Length: 177
Image (cartoon, rainbow, N blue to C red; front, side, top):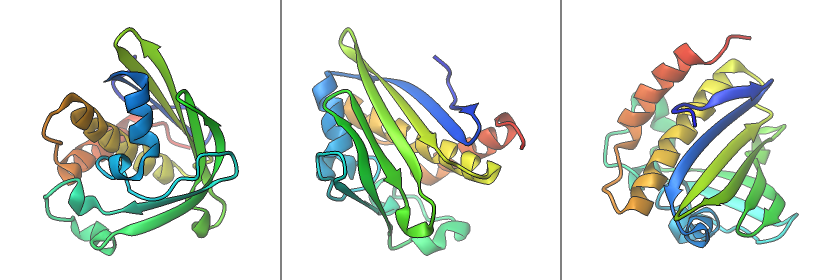
C-alpha cells in the first residue's frame, strides 16, 4: 500500500488506508453525521442511491490551529451538496461532490475487511485541473489521517499544519498535465 495518494487515471486521485475495524464501525464514520463530523464534515446523508448528501465543513472543530490566510473564507465553515450514486453497506459509498460549483466531481469509499482491520480505498474522480488534484489529494490525506486518529483513540493531528505539509508533498509528487 502506498503511503501517498496517486493519480491512477486522468482526473482521478486514489488513496488507500488500513484502519482499525470492525468494518461496521468504519462505515458509521462515513455515513453518520456526528461521527463523520469528527474527521470530515457533519451533515445529512440519505442512505440510498439518489439520496441527498450535505457536508457542512467546520475545520475549527477538527483542529485548534489558526486558519491560514488563504483559507480565511472557510473560517466559519462551508457546505457541499451532492447525491449518493452508490450505496452498498458496509462496503461501498459514492456521492457527487460540490454540485453547487458546476460540474461536480465524485468520491467513492470502498471498504474491505483485513482481519481485524479495514482497508479503505478512496477514489475521487473528475478532478479537471492539476491544482484540483493536488488540493483534493492533500485534503483527503489530511482528513483520512484524522479518521485514523479518531478510530485509534488518539488525539487528532493538527489539520492545517498537516494539510500544508501534505500539499507541498503532493505538489512535488503528482504529475503535471
